Image 1: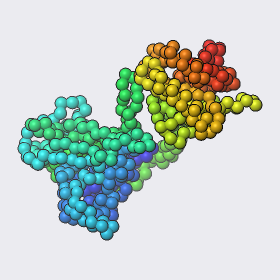
Image 2 (image 1 turned 180 degrees about the vertical axis):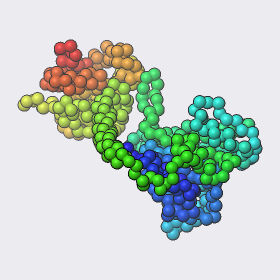
Image 3 (image 1 turned 45 degrees about the vertical axis):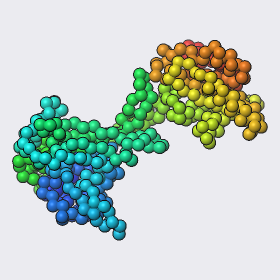
Length: 451
């Protein structure tokens, strides 16, 4: 099992034993600061910080928003002790002038502070702050408080390829009379909006926590020790001296060897667990057929069609047809053009059917071939499958038959995939039911789960 690693920037406390590594360094000597992303916890102790002695060009190189996210979104935590309102003066970096900024620029968050002072302190009445109680009781006055914050715009806009964006969540630990936080937790959350029932929801992908603690009425080193003890369960007040760790007691060596074996076994099991979790996520992606919409639905539909034996030519323009499909059964070759639709409504409208007809005409005019028009739809996406009505109105069915197109749902495609995985799908009958159909496909005897 890996040791817990804590980096304390702005301290002289260094401890190493069987369970933990506490490595300290001076903020004024940036070169001495190791990579914070290699630690479980990074503590900024600003209580004795002298901004005039800091090489800010080196600091802004080592600490930046991307590095912060590498820490927070991979199991790390950041704790800031003391007044973080430090201003970074304009300076040169790589030969270019950098405008003045704030110390917390490395968070990618813009903070606003109230610079007024006072001594009225209210500790939040919540079971969640139990571990902070000892520290918070040591606050006897304040000369600033937190007013607000917001993420820089580049983190709040959905990523063009993944749709991921960030949010902030504030948990106040102690506040002043007018409810401005004095001590607080700020969680940075990365996620993506998903379609779901009864409404869309925000799916959290990764989350990390920053903790901001004001100065208290003890000296700098004791403050760090209190934070280590209360927040991280590392009691340096009663810890063995560092030199004792190198002395091996009687019978210890045999136990150490057993610990190494168990650590090795755990590492293998953790790797296996990580692989299984990844495989589980991959296998569950097929369920997108049952609830996804629009551009998120199309890739999984095309993928499953390919798994079931079709050759897929993916679309070049997302505003046109959704793909071209070829299926060969013996000497017979079926070719089609796809329109993939989704809706929150119970029934499909005529728009989707008309688009299929347009794509058939496109095949004739541009490819000089008549393709089978195929409509694949997902309706009532916010409802469970067993509560969805027939999505094809009678008028739709009649028009589809007269238009020589075939239509079926993503739920039926999922069922075909499920039966195929179980070795119970007759692929030839499945594809013939699609390509030889005019109107809404009948899969009677093909997609029966009880057969």
